[in-house]
Amino acid sequence: MAKRHHNQKGNLESLFLHMEELVLANSGEDEFEEVFKLLIAKLWDERSQQSRFHCHSTDEVTFEAIAKLMQQAEKEWSGVLDDVKPRLTPEHLAICVDAISKHNISNDSLDVIDSFFEFIVAKSAKGAKGQYFTPRHVVELCVRILQPASSETVLDPACGSGGFLLHALSFVRRNERLDSVEELQNFCGEKLWGFDIDARAIRVAKALMVLAGDGNSNIIRLNSLLKPEMVGLFNNTDEPNLTIEDICRSRIKRHKGFDVILTNPPFAGEIREKHFLDCYTLANKKYRVERDVLFIERCLELLKPGGRLAIVLPHNKFAGNSFDFLREWVLKKARILAVIGLGRHTFLPHTHQKASILFLQKNHPSMKISPDYNIFFAISEKDGKNSKGQFILCESALEMGDAWDTIDHDFSEITENFTRFLRQENINFKD
Image (cartoon, rainbow, N blue to C red; front, side):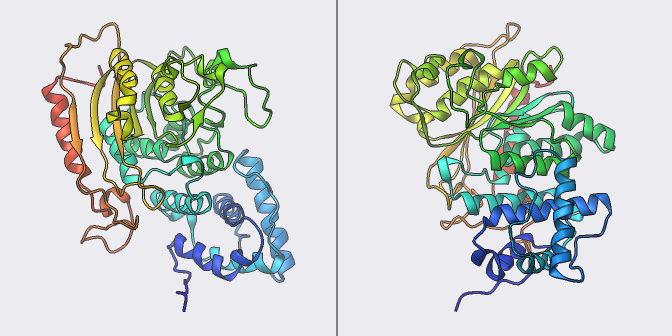
């Protein structure tokens, strides 16, 4: 007999599975979209203190009340919702509203909400187009290695659900006590930037940034690989033709590149358009090139001199003979700070693809680097997942909470060793 899921207060994944059993699987509607709309309506109800997200006298009255909350939320947080009308029947909607009303989203930690959005997006996407959401302890590892500051601009050009941006924000808040509403909004509104071509992922990222500090204005849908010289070459009206440079030119004063880029571009997919490839050196005159290769060149192009990059890549980019050209090109453009190998289970259950993280600092005219400089290498021997892709929790963790503290991994040891390496090499990111 199939296991029944119960709506446990404070457990949003349990809530989703419970609603899926009761209603969603038989509604004929998109499960993610309907739950996402309801969560945004609930969040707006809590933020605006209307106390209208509950079951009313009839299912029809409940339907109208929730629809109004959705409309208000989209008006205030433009771009978060794609459709402001509930698609469930009034009866089905009332069942879901009753279940969600037991939770207080605003009081849940951002890690809980982030984990839940990752859960339902991954469940609906199932690794489509090689877009696997980065486990949050891996995201935190990248952030702790590069140490973004409140004075620095942070970009993720393949932001997905916004995990890297959220953790960069959390890191800055912890280390610089960025607590006031004004400081938080200024940092989110001026320093955090996320772009992605996937419309659904962008809406999730916007919602996360609303929760984090109402800074959703810099989460924008576009093709990050599109360069200014390419605009006009493509007539596909289904994809946005704005470039990152277009956005920066209009929104950032005296912009000369980003200080920090944290990203995990799609592992799969190839670019075949000749006019597109002609604009990339790393296309190397080939007629098809994997997207992540182009993302390496694009990220270094978007960094300011001296800027720092963390990029998650399939293992073949580090060891495959066919990518010698890529590695030689990178060595000419940047100092390699570190290479950290991830365990084979890291991206399960979505893919067995083994990956590593490349950390770079873009060359600067004032940087004097020995041609035989040292590079920090590390291999994770505890990736925090089992062979089924389930998280392995620390013995002291009773349930899944903050990923860094509750998942059984060895990243803390790696970050401590890297910090020691920076001191030994006299590398200071704040210079």
